[in-house]
Length: 241
Image 1 (cartoon, helix red, strand yellow):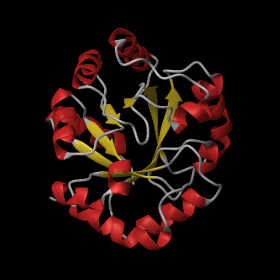
Image 2 (cartoon, rainbow, N blue to C red):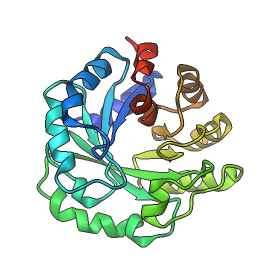
Image 3 (spheres, rainbow, N blue to C red):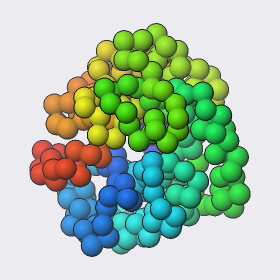
Image 4 (cartoon, helix red, strand yellow):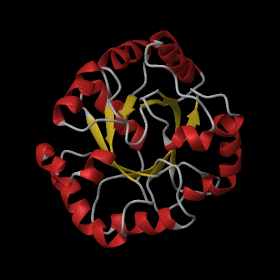
């Protein structure tokens, strides 16, 4: 599948909002995939993201192959490490953790990934990844050994996002982290959106349709929801087509 980024750009231009369901290979059992994806297909979801901070080698590829049996939605890798890269998906968010200062997650892991991506059919989408404090340590913070940006420092958040765009990132991803206690405030989303000319992704802590719509209204072009669906699949009932 090609044209993933072009579709995001076109959706942004038309004001169409996108929704990605994030599936963590470390938490999704293969025998539950069929039922789970059936609910995804009946929802307003437009994309499936696959990835996690701590995933065993080979696990992602097996999961992606199983998901593909049950849906035509585009599958995009949201990798926490190089070992999660698989050609079985349609695309990959090539994440640079620009909120932190660990060189491994700014460029080091990317250099390591090139040998896997050089001959891949994956659509590679450069993405500026910004972790925002949510009240507890996230797995991203622990694994990357970086500190999230403070929620009340909106100036730094929006300047970091703009710096990512100026560096050539095609997407900016504001992340509260898996299992965040609360979603990113709408004023942060709004201020960042005003700085950007590229699509804005928002994820972490969104557990209701009201919070989803608030993120959209504030300026998010694509919202990512993972934990809420893992903990309560009835949430899909609120998001049916």
